[in-house]
Image (cartoon, rainbow, N blue to C red; front, side):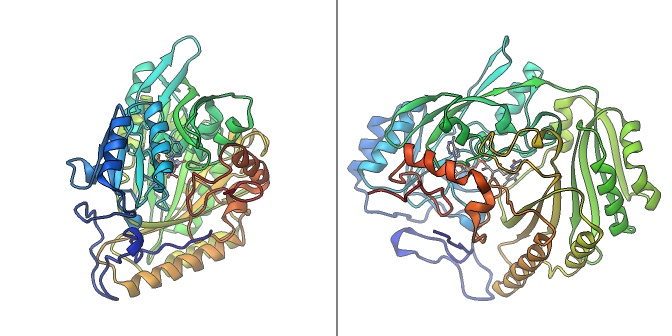
Length: 496
Ligand SMILES: Cc1cc2nc3c(=O)[nH]c(=O)nc-3n(C[C@H](O)[C@H](O)[C@H](O)COP(=O)(O)OP(=O)(O)OC[C@H]3O[C@@H](n4cnc5c(N)ncnc54)[C@H](O)[C@@H]3O)c2cc1C
């Protein structure tokens, strides 16, 4: 099942028409909504039939909102669907699944479209959940019920009005669908656990077209807490236990170019000993010379932040430093947020137990210095995990990575004008860097940063929880109606 999809493979239906120019030539890889992309010979009457079944509507190429809805975040995987079902309610989702099965059209669910590996793209039917974006709130229980197609940009203002929060990321256009199902990391996780740990209920439409309120004690619910999107059905809502926004909150952003290796080592040691109310992201920007950036939040004061970072200040003064107290949601939206605009990129991840050793840090800086370069950038980012992320045993939810202190990702971005030759050099470098770092890491990779070049992806994402996930898959989707290149196969394989 493993499939490496390169930017050269823009699958245009069964013809697999490559849309890129020859080697070394600049390639047109932006959204091209006008192109005919028919994976299957779907008669117009079939589309009319789908439209009749939905309270929402069907979009076909050329529709006004087409490009906005179909373009994925990672443009490497810019495959266009033959049509989009814009679902207005769970029944629309059920009808879309049944229609796709009846007409034998491949389909995927799309929430925010931020899957790194393009697993919410298809040349068949895209089941778009963007209209399922309500946020309801129970003031007694503080449980928020969030529509399965909600984007962070809708969720954050809703939570802000209520004075509550959850563990969430930084990008406004990431969707809750993929985020919750694959774990969900963010600056609140060390104090409050992962987003999937805060999940207390979900509604799911399964392959048979049933709309199910999933029993929180069931294995299916367990699987929805880290088993990744696109495997078991389409979740039309997520109920999440919120908590009050913390105060006081201090956010910080610092950058160093002087003595970056030693600053990095000092920061890592300092952050490792920090309280659970601190969330951080520590970055090496590749280049000659590499530099170091730190971004994060502390439930505490600016003085407390400076105190934690004192060992790094003792080595070198930062080139830029912002450490400021802010109200929670202003901090998230105005200071910590990342734009996450669509682009061409690849990321490879691994978890670390404990801080990186001196040898690991030397290795990282050595590779960072040797980056071949693109017009974009490359970074080794460490997200600080630990504390409450590790409070649950690995088998408590499908998210198995419960023994880490850092999650590393090495990212590489390039432009549409990057030559094939330069891209190859960059990809080789990325693989070399990653290969050198995994010698120091634990075996797991984060399922929400799916990596098409992993060969042992099922073990890497799910470890010892894989067997149970495969049993759940055999129960709810034995025929593999939900599939993508790294999907969880049912125990015993897909049935006819
Ligand atoms: C810029 C950027 C920033 C990010 N920041 C963070 C971060 O801070 N923390 C973090 O943990 N991750 C982060 N991620 C990773 C992100 O969590 C995953 O890519 C996630 O899968 C995206 O969800 P989505 O709904 O936007 O994606 P989509 O591509 O729409 O969906 C992802 C997968 O889930 C399936 N799916 C989507 N919705 C549903 C649903 N309702 N029911 C069932 N299946 C569904 C899709 O078919 C697909 O297989 C980031 C990614 C990007 C590109």
